[in-house]
Image (cartoon, rainbow, N blue to C red; front, side, top):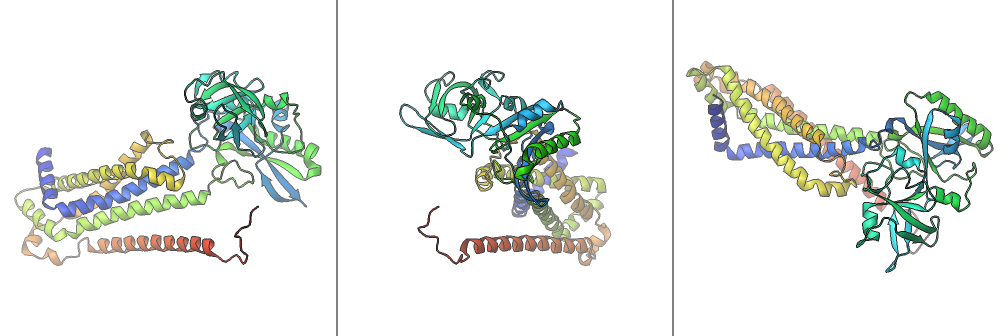
Length: 465
């Protein structure tokens, strides 16, 4: 029976090649847009989730006060904070500090030419315990324990030593925050794109102490991260931060606070962030847009399928007269719908593959690196296919299979409004959503154009800072 249904479905779709192609392409465009946007959303929502301790990691930050009101909130804090928390609170099982004094790049003195690398940080040994890296060479337990040790990413090692092994080599930096001679003690894989702790070079924090540095509550250039034990009392930790604020920072008008690691990228609005963050409202709006686009594609498919109702009504009437049961007709139309939806999904996956580089450039995110084409992506694709079959295929199947053969053969059904009211409503919804999205795009375009072309009232040409 299935073989007969499949032959009839393929024959029917082949007879209506243009109609079938338009249906499949309309669906595929909506599916491709939905999958691309959801890949971006997954990338943003997966930020900083690589560490097995992510749920227990927090970052301290400074609040500047005046008359009890918060004036500024800075992501930087003091160098003494991390060690003090580890010493004073049993709930704090580990900590790390990141420091580069706003010198995010470092220049190495090389035999042929200086080489400059972005993403340079001094970190405590706890960094590798709290944020485990994929080590290619070196021992993660010891590679940041001693002064003047350095860890390179695979990309950095390949750039600095393209024709030889980097392990054990001496790298010289002649000036700036990182001045000194460092021994390469580890090589790690490049960090994923969905973390705010990206780096190319990690220096041991012990190098600062070897150069005469002492922890203090004065200047604050460090980013302090600390890991709590599972089930730790957050109120107790916050009370300890308040104690430090009152003891060491009250005269400077500074109060310490804390935020969870996974909340930094989605919603943190502090100054001196390591990298720009994203507004959660933007993510919610993009999710809504993705659903709108997919919904419009499904509505378009339903409208195109039911629009040929009179032609299919004659077919259904004849098949019922010669003995076809309604369940057989429903199976027939669902199989046709599955073939169209499956073809649309194949086209959509091809579009996603082809458009991913341009989309990654547009969003500034490497969506193929993380989370990439993983099991969740394929499950999402299968879910969209199933949803298309249920929402966009089930209704036409039941409507088309319900035609009364007597009325159809007598010609009375052609004037019926069966399914017409819903189709009209779907057309209205489809156009309303499309018009709303077009208006939104035009408004945003006008706003951007206004900001780019607004007369500032002063000439900035030939002026440097």
